[in-house]
Length: 134
Image (cartoon, rainbow, N blue to C red; front, top):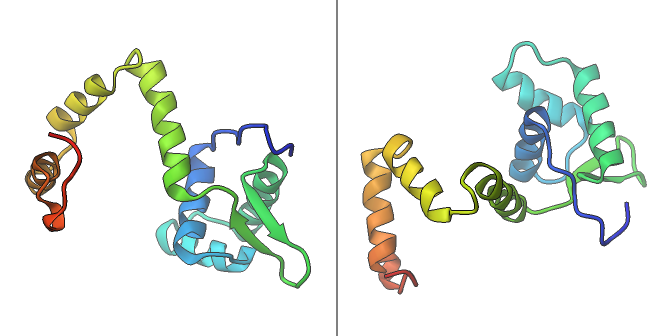
C-alpha cells in the first residue's frame, strides 16, 4: 500500500479484530481467535485467519513474517482511526455538523454518569486541568 493512500475504512467485523489487536498488541491469529471466541461462540479460527490476511492486504494490518506464527499489528492507532471514522460519519450523516452529532449522542446514548463526566470536561475541571472548551 502506498504511504499517501488513505487507510480504507474497516467493516464491522474488521473493527472487532482491530479492537482485539489494540487491546492485546501484536498477536498471532490463534490469540486473536481465542479473544474473539471468548466473546462470540460462532467465531471460527479459519475465518479469523482469513480476515486477518485480507486486512493485511487492505493495509489495515502489518504482519511480522520474520517469525512463526506471524504477528499481526494494527497499522493505525485506535484514536487516529476513530477520529477518521467520526469525521466521515459527521460529514455523511450530520451534514458536517459536529454539534448535531453531539446533541444526538447526548439525547440518545449518554448515561447519567457519562453526562456528569462530559459536564466536567466542558467546565475544564478534569484532573484540575483546563479542558480547553468553555
